[in-house]
Length: 145
Image 1 (cartoon, rainbow, N blue to C red):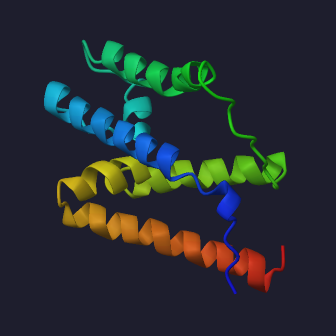
Image 2: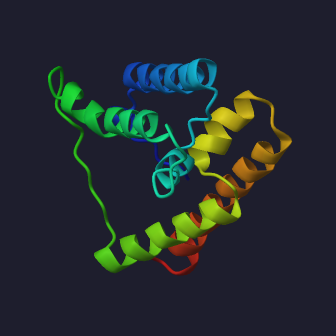
């Protein structure tokens, strides 16, 4: 049985967030000719091409600075993480390795690639989702965590 926490259902903020993500991704593509894949934007700072650093820093500053703007209007939602630091570090490293093997992350493939009707992004996004479903099933139902 699936138990839905209806008190946590926030369609207004979810829709607004989705619209802002879509607007940011479309603007970056239309105005700068770049895909809004966060791992690619961040990774490009490690060895930036000439004149390629400022827009990457601006995009990441906006991404990280948005919660500061949000608190002017409402409280930030409470964050509850049920994993310890070793699990978070391992998960983060696995995500990083996965983005290299998958040639992009969920934002690059799932938001930008699917909107461009990229077959490669469809396969990548289906792989992300299937892996997530299997991981949750194994952790919650087989390992009992």
